[in-house]
Length: 398
Image 1 (cartoon, rainbow, N blue to C red):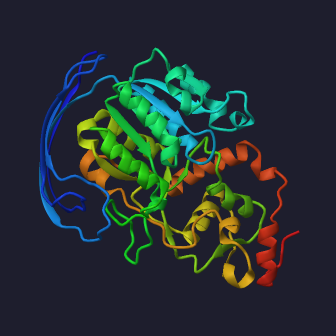
Image 2: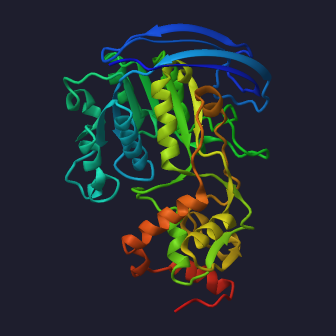
Image 3: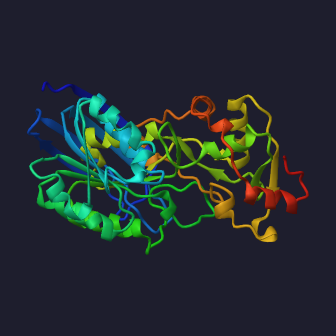
């Protein structure tokens, strides 16, 4: 396959946290792929690595890159539930559209009830695009993928070392050149100085942190991606739908606290495009941690208002203190009752990535699908909402 050569000259002067001494690194590498032609790069820049220190020394970087696009064989180990499942789906489709080979292994049994939900019900789109879909246990990954070889493996399943180690060890023994891991921005410690940036202190005993440490020791080329909340067609975990459910039924939207808490909500296409950048520029991505998020924050009240605007309907927001009414905020509301906002600084600087999330427009698309599938007409119960509204003496809609 013919290589498409691109080059860039980048000057930057940014604050960059790192575990290593505050010195730049120089790398000159060439790599060939069994499925394509030569790729080379020369770069001078510091690494982004996680650190417990908030201090960020200011470093200058000079980067010269010559990168040849090459066809990669990519294996995606995908979770069978939760909000992260849609990441593997979008990533697979984007890789295929860029000319790469993709095999997506979903943990579990193809005949399970979990596969009756999105994004799994749309896996035919991956097959139609030339990809492969298989199911199995990560403990037997070598058997499930026997006879196949890969340049890149993404683990979008494990949350702790017990779940990821079998995949990582198999990839290492199989000679996989690059290992990518979907971590979580939830591992950052609370900060009085948001947003969270790469290098901020993390919870040392968090499962994702232990995985990142293991990968850094096991692989020469690895990278970790820390997402937050996401929206997008095919997601099976409520985000914007929680707001739509109340707005279309004329119900007040109960939001904990002041409603001014900042969070980050990304369209999943941003996550897949960042991962694709790492696959296509492995030397730059190597050894780095990336906040896999959009580049704009939104308040909790702001999310309610944007959802109402997308639906073309009014919204009544009420605020409550979960402690005073005995309600568990984790069950009553889909987001954390605190500032929980990360920025994608490393991806922008190192990978040249740009966010395409536009919440006002993206939510219009999401509301169209919400109505199309008939969720606006579905019978629902709002028991916890009713308890909150009753304590606030707010009339409960019949």
